[in-house]
Image (cartoon, rainbow, N blue to C red; front, side, top):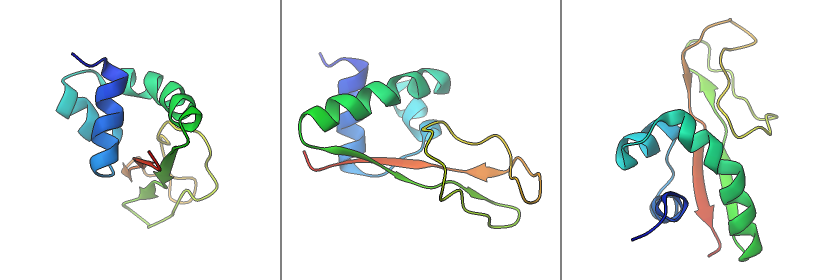
Length: 95
């Protein structure tokens, strides 16, 4: 039996997913996924891998959150103030 973090890492090795897709695949709350991501980034880095993040973008105006370093998704767009944000998507590479 794998821990929740091990299950998240396994899923992220297969393909890039956002926190909503991860929470649905593992039947846990989305907030719980957000809590585990910093720990997963550290443990993957310790084994020579990397938690890559494809930036979120606004569905309304297309603004990309390229400069954002936090792992949690943004709540709204700074340009158009819309809350229709897609992503970010995470993937584990290098393991």
